[in-house]
Image 1 (cartoon, rainbow, N blue to C red):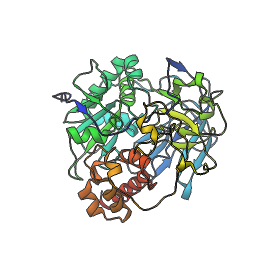
Image 2 (cartoon, rainbow, N blue to C red):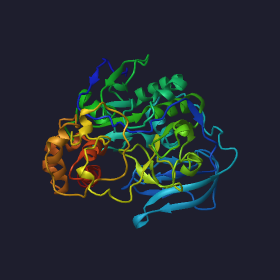
Image 3 (cartoon, one colour):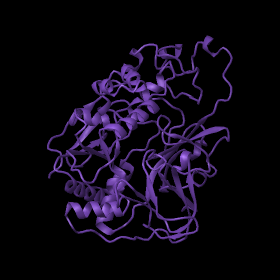
Image 4 (cartoon, rainbow, N blue to C red):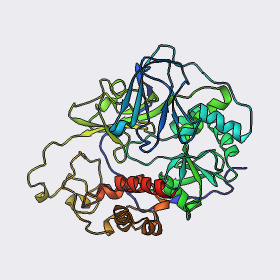
Length: 447
Protein backbone atom coordinates (compact mmCIF):
# COMPACT_ATOMS: atom_id res chain seq x y z
CA UNK A 1 0.00 0.00 0.00
CA UNK A 2 1.26 3.49 -0.81
CA UNK A 3 1.56 6.32 1.62
CA UNK A 4 -1.23 8.83 2.08
CA UNK A 5 -2.68 9.69 -1.36
CA UNK A 6 -3.23 13.41 -0.73
CA UNK A 7 -1.75 16.18 1.34
CA UNK A 8 -3.96 18.13 3.73
CA UNK A 9 -2.98 21.28 5.61
CA UNK A 10 -4.25 21.35 9.19
CA UNK A 11 -4.40 24.85 10.65
CA UNK A 12 -5.70 25.60 14.13
CA UNK A 13 -6.90 28.86 15.61
CA UNK A 14 -8.12 27.48 18.93
CA UNK A 15 -5.48 26.48 21.42
CA UNK A 16 -2.81 28.09 23.57
CA UNK A 17 0.98 28.32 23.48
CA UNK A 18 2.20 28.80 27.04
CA UNK A 19 4.89 31.52 27.17
CA UNK A 20 6.98 29.68 29.74
CA UNK A 21 10.35 31.07 30.74
CA UNK A 22 13.37 28.78 30.41
CA UNK A 23 13.12 27.63 26.78
CA UNK A 24 15.79 25.18 25.55
CA UNK A 25 18.28 26.54 23.02
CA UNK A 26 21.45 25.49 21.23
CA UNK A 27 22.76 22.38 19.52
CA UNK A 28 22.33 18.77 20.60
CA UNK A 29 24.84 17.59 23.22
CA UNK A 30 25.62 14.12 24.48
CA UNK A 31 25.00 12.97 28.03
CA UNK A 32 27.54 10.53 29.46
CA UNK A 33 26.74 6.80 29.06
CA UNK A 34 24.38 5.64 31.81
CA UNK A 35 25.38 3.89 35.00
CA UNK A 36 21.79 2.84 35.69
CA UNK A 37 18.65 2.65 33.58
CA UNK A 38 15.05 1.98 34.52
CA UNK A 39 12.69 0.12 32.18
CA UNK A 40 9.53 2.12 32.76
CA UNK A 41 6.09 0.50 32.52
CA UNK A 42 4.35 2.78 35.04
CA UNK A 43 2.34 4.32 32.19
CA UNK A 44 0.52 1.03 31.56
CA UNK A 45 -1.68 1.12 34.64
CA UNK A 46 -4.02 -1.76 33.77
CA UNK A 47 -1.59 -4.12 32.02
CA UNK A 48 -0.33 -7.33 33.56
CA UNK A 49 3.25 -8.40 32.92
CA UNK A 50 5.22 -11.59 33.09
CA UNK A 51 8.59 -10.84 34.67
CA UNK A 52 11.48 -12.59 32.89
CA UNK A 53 14.24 -11.48 35.26
CA UNK A 54 14.83 -11.02 38.96
CA UNK A 55 17.35 -9.03 41.01
CA UNK A 56 20.84 -10.40 40.58
CA UNK A 57 20.34 -11.65 37.00
CA UNK A 58 22.79 -10.56 34.32
CA UNK A 59 21.28 -9.28 31.06
CA UNK A 60 22.59 -8.49 27.60
CA UNK A 61 21.42 -5.83 25.16
CA UNK A 62 18.00 -6.75 23.79
CA UNK A 63 17.16 -9.39 26.41
CA UNK A 64 13.43 -9.56 27.27
CA UNK A 65 12.71 -8.21 30.73
CA UNK A 66 8.90 -8.05 30.73
CA UNK A 67 6.19 -9.58 28.56
CA UNK A 68 2.61 -8.44 28.06
CA UNK A 69 0.39 -11.28 29.34
CA UNK A 70 -2.50 -10.12 27.14
CA UNK A 71 -0.32 -10.22 24.02
CA UNK A 72 2.19 -13.10 24.23
CA UNK A 73 5.44 -12.24 22.53
CA UNK A 74 5.18 -8.47 23.05
CA UNK A 75 8.39 -7.86 24.94
CA UNK A 76 9.86 -4.97 26.88
CA UNK A 77 13.61 -5.34 26.44
CA UNK A 78 16.73 -3.91 27.99
CA UNK A 79 18.70 -1.32 25.97
CA UNK A 80 21.85 -2.07 27.91
CA UNK A 81 23.91 -4.94 29.25
CA UNK A 82 24.37 -5.22 32.99
CA UNK A 83 22.82 -6.61 36.15
CA UNK A 84 19.24 -6.33 37.40
CA UNK A 85 19.43 -4.60 40.79
CA UNK A 86 15.78 -3.96 41.65
CA UNK A 87 12.18 -4.48 40.58
CA UNK A 88 10.08 -1.52 41.73
CA UNK A 89 6.41 -2.11 42.44
CA UNK A 90 3.63 0.29 43.36
CA UNK A 91 0.08 0.03 44.69
CA UNK A 92 -1.19 -3.57 44.78
CA UNK A 93 2.27 -4.70 43.63
CA UNK A 94 1.82 -3.16 40.20
CA UNK A 95 5.11 -3.19 38.28
CA UNK A 96 6.62 0.26 37.76
CA UNK A 97 10.32 -0.14 36.89
CA UNK A 98 12.99 -2.73 36.40
CA UNK A 99 16.33 -1.14 37.35
CA UNK A 100 19.52 -2.30 35.68
CA UNK A 101 23.09 -1.41 36.60
CA UNK A 102 24.86 -0.91 33.28
CA UNK A 103 27.99 -2.67 32.12
CA UNK A 104 30.60 -0.93 29.97
CA UNK A 105 29.81 -2.72 26.69
CA UNK A 106 26.14 -1.88 26.31
CA UNK A 107 25.95 -0.50 22.76
CA UNK A 108 26.39 -3.66 20.66
CA UNK A 109 23.71 -4.62 18.10
CA UNK A 110 21.95 -7.79 19.28
CA UNK A 111 19.64 -8.40 16.30
CA UNK A 112 19.99 -9.29 12.62
CA UNK A 113 18.69 -7.18 9.70
CA UNK A 114 15.26 -8.26 8.46
CA UNK A 115 14.78 -8.85 4.75
CA UNK A 116 11.31 -10.42 4.85
CA UNK A 117 8.29 -8.42 3.73
CA UNK A 118 5.76 -10.75 5.33
CA UNK A 119 3.44 -8.93 7.76
CA UNK A 120 3.30 -11.76 10.31
CA UNK A 121 7.09 -12.12 10.40
CA UNK A 122 7.59 -8.37 10.69
CA UNK A 123 5.14 -8.12 13.60
CA UNK A 124 6.77 -11.05 15.39
CA UNK A 125 10.17 -9.41 14.93
CA UNK A 126 8.95 -6.04 16.23
CA UNK A 127 7.31 -7.72 19.23
CA UNK A 128 10.44 -9.68 20.08
CA UNK A 129 12.66 -6.59 19.72
CA UNK A 130 10.46 -4.42 21.94
CA UNK A 131 9.31 -1.99 19.25
CA UNK A 132 5.71 -3.14 18.97
CA UNK A 133 5.25 -1.78 22.49
CA UNK A 134 5.68 1.71 20.96
CA UNK A 135 2.67 1.51 18.63
CA UNK A 136 -0.69 2.65 20.00
CA UNK A 137 -4.21 2.30 18.71
CA UNK A 138 -7.38 4.35 18.83
CA UNK A 139 -10.09 4.63 20.00
CA UNK A 140 -9.15 4.95 23.66
CA UNK A 141 -5.36 5.09 23.22
CA UNK A 142 -3.81 1.75 24.22
CA UNK A 143 -1.15 -0.57 22.89
CA UNK A 144 -1.91 -1.80 19.38
CA UNK A 145 -3.46 -5.22 18.82
CA UNK A 146 -1.20 -7.08 16.35
CA UNK A 147 -4.04 -9.40 15.29
CA UNK A 148 -5.97 -6.49 13.74
CA UNK A 149 -5.06 -4.61 10.58
CA UNK A 150 -5.32 -0.83 11.11
CA UNK A 151 -7.37 1.38 8.81
CA UNK A 152 -4.56 3.95 8.85
CA UNK A 153 -1.31 4.74 10.65
CA UNK A 154 -0.50 8.26 11.88
CA UNK A 155 3.17 9.15 12.27
CA UNK A 156 3.82 12.05 14.65
CA UNK A 157 6.62 14.25 13.33
CA UNK A 158 5.42 17.42 15.04
CA UNK A 159 5.57 18.76 18.61
CA UNK A 160 3.79 21.73 20.15
CA UNK A 161 3.86 21.03 23.91
CA UNK A 162 5.90 23.44 26.04
CA UNK A 163 9.68 22.82 25.81
CA UNK A 164 9.23 19.74 23.57
CA UNK A 165 12.04 19.19 21.01
CA UNK A 166 11.20 18.96 17.33
CA UNK A 167 11.23 15.37 16.00
CA UNK A 168 13.26 16.70 13.06
CA UNK A 169 16.31 16.88 15.31
CA UNK A 170 16.33 13.10 14.97
CA UNK A 171 14.74 12.75 11.54
CA UNK A 172 17.31 14.97 9.82
CA UNK A 173 20.17 12.94 11.31
CA UNK A 174 18.55 9.58 10.49
CA UNK A 175 16.63 10.33 7.31
CA UNK A 176 17.36 7.04 5.53
CA UNK A 177 16.32 4.98 8.58
CA UNK A 178 13.15 7.05 8.91
CA UNK A 179 12.20 6.28 5.32
CA UNK A 180 12.95 2.59 5.90
CA UNK A 181 10.72 2.66 8.94
CA UNK A 182 7.91 4.14 6.85
CA UNK A 183 8.34 1.37 4.29
CA UNK A 184 7.99 -1.17 7.10
CA UNK A 185 4.81 0.48 8.33
CA UNK A 186 3.32 0.10 4.86
CA UNK A 187 3.45 -3.67 5.38
CA UNK A 188 1.41 -3.40 8.57
CA UNK A 189 -1.65 -1.69 7.08
CA UNK A 190 -3.89 -1.83 4.04
CA UNK A 191 -4.76 1.82 4.54
CA UNK A 192 -2.81 5.06 4.18
CA UNK A 193 0.09 6.28 6.29
CA UNK A 194 -0.36 9.89 7.42
CA UNK A 195 2.86 11.72 8.27
CA UNK A 196 2.13 14.81 10.36
CA UNK A 197 4.79 17.51 10.10
CA UNK A 198 5.12 21.16 11.14
CA UNK A 199 7.80 22.26 8.69
CA UNK A 200 8.49 21.89 4.97
CA UNK A 201 10.29 18.64 4.23
CA UNK A 202 10.95 16.14 1.48
CA UNK A 203 9.01 13.46 3.34
CA UNK A 204 6.59 11.71 0.97
CA UNK A 205 3.06 13.07 1.20
CA UNK A 206 3.41 14.59 4.67
CA UNK A 207 0.60 16.76 6.02
CA UNK A 208 1.49 20.27 7.16
CA UNK A 209 0.28 21.22 10.66
CA UNK A 210 0.33 24.75 11.96
CA UNK A 211 -1.20 26.59 14.88
CA UNK A 212 -0.98 26.72 18.66
CA UNK A 213 -0.82 23.75 21.01
CA UNK A 214 -2.42 21.15 20.77
CA UNK A 215 -1.71 21.06 17.02
CA UNK A 216 0.64 18.09 17.62
CA UNK A 217 -1.98 15.92 19.36
CA UNK A 218 -2.96 12.83 17.35
CA UNK A 219 -6.65 13.43 18.08
CA UNK A 220 -6.53 16.60 15.96
CA UNK A 221 -4.95 14.76 13.03
CA UNK A 222 -7.34 11.82 13.25
CA UNK A 223 -10.40 14.08 13.42
CA UNK A 224 -9.34 15.86 10.23
CA UNK A 225 -8.24 12.83 8.21
CA UNK A 226 -9.88 9.67 9.59
CA UNK A 227 -12.62 10.53 12.11
CA UNK A 228 -13.50 7.85 14.66
CA UNK A 229 -17.20 7.11 14.74
CA UNK A 230 -17.28 3.54 16.06
CA UNK A 231 -15.57 1.49 18.74
CA UNK A 232 -14.86 -1.12 16.06
CA UNK A 233 -12.48 1.18 14.19
CA UNK A 234 -8.76 0.57 14.52
CA UNK A 235 -6.25 3.36 13.90
CA UNK A 236 -2.60 3.19 14.91
CA UNK A 237 -0.32 6.03 16.01
CA UNK A 238 3.47 6.10 16.36
CA UNK A 239 6.10 8.75 17.13
CA UNK A 240 8.76 9.55 14.52
CA UNK A 241 11.47 8.45 16.99
CA UNK A 242 10.10 4.90 16.97
CA UNK A 243 9.80 4.91 13.17
CA UNK A 244 13.54 5.60 13.06
CA UNK A 245 14.11 2.75 15.52
CA UNK A 246 12.14 0.38 13.26
CA UNK A 247 14.17 1.51 10.24
CA UNK A 248 17.49 0.92 12.00
CA UNK A 249 16.37 -2.49 13.22
CA UNK A 250 15.41 -3.60 9.71
CA UNK A 251 18.45 -2.11 7.97
CA UNK A 252 21.26 -3.07 10.33
CA UNK A 253 19.75 -4.96 13.27
CA UNK A 254 20.71 -2.06 15.54
CA UNK A 255 18.70 -1.48 18.70
CA UNK A 256 18.19 2.29 18.64
CA UNK A 257 18.27 3.08 22.34
CA UNK A 258 19.22 6.77 22.14
CA UNK A 259 16.82 9.69 21.95
CA UNK A 260 17.05 13.48 21.79
CA UNK A 261 15.32 15.29 24.64
CA UNK A 262 15.08 18.86 25.86
CA UNK A 263 16.06 20.03 29.34
CA UNK A 264 14.37 23.31 30.20
CA UNK A 265 12.54 25.43 32.73
CA UNK A 266 13.44 28.10 35.25
CA UNK A 267 14.69 25.47 37.65
CA UNK A 268 17.47 24.55 35.20
CA UNK A 269 20.66 26.60 35.05
CA UNK A 270 20.45 28.95 32.08
CA UNK A 271 23.61 27.64 30.47
CA UNK A 272 22.37 24.03 30.82
CA UNK A 273 19.02 24.53 29.06
CA UNK A 274 19.07 22.84 25.69
CA UNK A 275 18.90 19.58 23.78
CA UNK A 276 20.63 16.38 24.82
CA UNK A 277 21.10 12.87 23.47
CA UNK A 278 20.44 10.32 26.21
CA UNK A 279 19.90 6.57 26.58
CA UNK A 280 16.34 5.28 26.97
CA UNK A 281 15.40 4.95 30.64
CA UNK A 282 18.43 6.85 31.90
CA UNK A 283 18.49 8.06 35.50
CA UNK A 284 17.34 11.66 36.04
CA UNK A 285 20.20 12.10 38.50
CA UNK A 286 22.71 11.39 35.74
CA UNK A 287 20.89 13.48 33.14
CA UNK A 288 20.49 16.50 35.46
CA UNK A 289 23.94 16.34 36.98
CA UNK A 290 25.06 19.94 37.75
CA UNK A 291 22.10 21.32 35.77
CA UNK A 292 19.59 22.20 38.52
CA UNK A 293 19.56 25.85 39.56
CA UNK A 294 17.76 25.12 42.83
CA UNK A 295 16.93 22.07 44.93
CA UNK A 296 13.51 23.59 45.64
CA UNK A 297 12.31 23.23 42.03
CA UNK A 298 9.88 20.53 40.98
CA UNK A 299 11.39 18.06 38.51
CA UNK A 300 9.02 16.86 35.80
CA UNK A 301 9.65 13.93 33.49
CA UNK A 302 7.79 15.03 30.39
CA UNK A 303 6.46 18.43 29.37
CA UNK A 304 4.86 20.78 31.95
CA UNK A 305 1.31 19.93 30.83
CA UNK A 306 1.43 16.13 30.64
CA UNK A 307 4.61 15.19 32.49
CA UNK A 308 4.92 13.35 35.79
CA UNK A 309 6.36 14.69 39.03
CA UNK A 310 9.70 13.02 39.63
CA UNK A 311 12.75 13.05 41.85
CA UNK A 312 16.43 12.73 40.97
CA UNK A 313 16.22 9.05 41.97
CA UNK A 314 13.67 8.38 39.21
CA UNK A 315 14.15 7.61 35.51
CA UNK A 316 12.94 9.37 32.39
CA UNK A 317 9.50 8.15 31.31
CA UNK A 318 9.08 5.70 28.46
CA UNK A 319 7.37 8.19 26.12
CA UNK A 320 8.94 11.38 27.45
CA UNK A 321 11.13 13.68 25.35
CA UNK A 322 11.38 16.53 27.87
CA UNK A 323 12.73 17.00 31.37
CA UNK A 324 11.92 20.29 33.04
CA UNK A 325 12.15 21.95 36.42
CA UNK A 326 9.79 24.71 37.54
CA UNK A 327 9.55 26.69 40.79
CA UNK A 328 7.84 24.83 43.62
CA UNK A 329 5.56 27.06 45.70
CA UNK A 330 5.17 25.99 49.32
CA UNK A 331 3.05 28.88 50.58
CA UNK A 332 0.23 30.76 48.92
CA UNK A 333 0.95 34.53 48.58
CA UNK A 334 -1.17 36.70 50.85
CA UNK A 335 -4.07 38.43 49.03
CA UNK A 336 -2.47 37.72 45.65
CA UNK A 337 -5.81 38.25 43.90
CA UNK A 338 -5.82 41.98 44.79
CA UNK A 339 -2.81 42.78 42.60
CA UNK A 340 -2.99 44.16 39.07
CA UNK A 341 -1.07 41.16 37.75
CA UNK A 342 1.24 43.10 35.45
CA UNK A 343 3.74 40.24 35.41
CA UNK A 344 1.31 37.35 35.74
CA UNK A 345 0.15 35.12 32.91
CA UNK A 346 -3.57 34.98 32.17
CA UNK A 347 -5.42 32.94 29.57
CA UNK A 348 -8.81 34.47 30.45
CA UNK A 349 -7.86 38.19 30.55
CA UNK A 350 -8.19 38.23 34.34
CA UNK A 351 -5.10 40.38 34.90
CA UNK A 352 -3.93 43.62 33.36
CA UNK A 353 -1.05 41.74 31.74
CA UNK A 354 -3.53 40.61 29.04
CA UNK A 355 -3.36 44.13 27.58
CA UNK A 356 0.45 44.21 27.54
CA UNK A 357 2.80 42.71 24.93
CA UNK A 358 3.30 39.00 25.45
CA UNK A 359 6.54 37.82 27.03
CA UNK A 360 7.95 34.75 28.74
CA UNK A 361 6.28 34.25 32.10
CA UNK A 362 7.38 32.68 35.34
CA UNK A 363 4.85 29.98 36.17
CA UNK A 364 5.10 27.90 39.31
CA UNK A 365 3.34 24.84 40.71
CA UNK A 366 0.77 26.99 42.57
CA UNK A 367 -2.84 26.20 41.62
CA UNK A 368 -4.26 29.45 43.10
CA UNK A 369 -7.30 27.70 44.50
CA UNK A 370 -8.87 24.35 45.30
CA UNK A 371 -11.20 22.07 43.38
CA UNK A 372 -14.78 23.30 43.26
CA UNK A 373 -17.88 22.87 41.04
CA UNK A 374 -17.75 23.78 37.35
CA UNK A 375 -18.26 27.46 36.62
CA UNK A 376 -18.59 28.07 32.88
CA UNK A 377 -17.95 25.80 29.91
CA UNK A 378 -17.02 28.75 27.68
CA UNK A 379 -13.52 28.84 29.20
CA UNK A 380 -12.67 25.41 27.83
CA UNK A 381 -14.01 25.92 24.33
CA UNK A 382 -11.43 28.67 23.75
CA UNK A 383 -8.57 26.17 23.92
CA UNK A 384 -10.29 22.95 22.78
CA UNK A 385 -10.04 22.66 18.98
CA UNK A 386 -11.86 19.31 18.89
CA UNK A 387 -15.61 19.48 18.43
CA UNK A 388 -16.10 18.16 21.94
CA UNK A 389 -18.31 19.69 24.68
CA UNK A 390 -15.59 19.55 27.30
CA UNK A 391 -17.53 20.18 30.50
CA UNK A 392 -20.41 17.87 29.54
CA UNK A 393 -18.05 15.02 28.63
CA UNK A 394 -16.16 15.33 31.91
CA UNK A 395 -19.42 15.29 33.87
CA UNK A 396 -20.58 12.17 32.00
CA UNK A 397 -17.30 10.40 32.83
CA UNK A 398 -17.52 11.39 36.50
CA UNK A 399 -21.01 9.85 36.58
CA UNK A 400 -19.75 6.83 34.57
CA UNK A 401 -22.54 7.45 32.06
CA UNK A 402 -20.71 5.88 29.12
CA UNK A 403 -23.74 5.98 26.82
CA UNK A 404 -23.81 9.76 27.15
CA UNK A 405 -20.01 9.99 27.00
CA UNK A 406 -19.98 8.13 23.67
CA UNK A 407 -22.49 10.60 22.25
CA UNK A 408 -20.24 13.46 23.42
CA UNK A 409 -17.10 12.08 21.75
CA UNK A 410 -15.36 9.73 24.19
CA UNK A 411 -13.97 7.61 21.35
CA UNK A 412 -12.35 10.60 19.65
CA UNK A 413 -10.27 11.91 22.54
CA UNK A 414 -7.14 11.13 24.50
CA UNK A 415 -6.30 12.36 28.02
CA UNK A 416 -3.66 14.73 26.60
CA UNK A 417 -6.44 16.64 24.78
CA UNK A 418 -7.67 17.91 28.14
CA UNK A 419 -4.34 19.23 29.44
CA UNK A 420 -5.01 22.80 28.27
CA UNK A 421 -8.63 22.93 29.52
CA UNK A 422 -7.38 21.63 32.89
CA UNK A 423 -4.61 24.24 32.92
CA UNK A 424 -6.99 27.20 32.49
CA UNK A 425 -9.83 25.64 34.51
CA UNK A 426 -11.03 28.06 37.22
CA UNK A 427 -12.56 25.09 39.07
CA UNK A 428 -9.26 23.11 39.20
CA UNK A 429 -10.92 19.95 37.86
CA UNK A 430 -8.31 17.19 37.16
CA UNK A 431 -9.67 16.52 33.68
CA UNK A 432 -6.71 14.50 32.42
CA UNK A 433 -7.03 11.99 35.27
CA UNK A 434 -10.81 11.81 34.85
CA UNK A 435 -10.57 11.06 31.12
CA UNK A 436 -7.79 8.50 31.63
CA UNK A 437 -9.74 6.68 34.35
CA UNK A 438 -12.98 6.87 32.35
CA UNK A 439 -11.40 5.39 29.23
CA UNK A 440 -9.79 2.60 31.23
CA UNK A 441 -13.15 1.66 32.73
CA UNK A 442 -14.75 1.78 29.29
CA UNK A 443 -12.02 -0.50 27.85
CA UNK A 444 -12.46 -2.99 30.70
CA UNK A 445 -16.24 -3.13 30.26
CA UNK A 446 -16.78 -2.81 26.52
CA UNK A 447 -13.60 -3.35 24.46
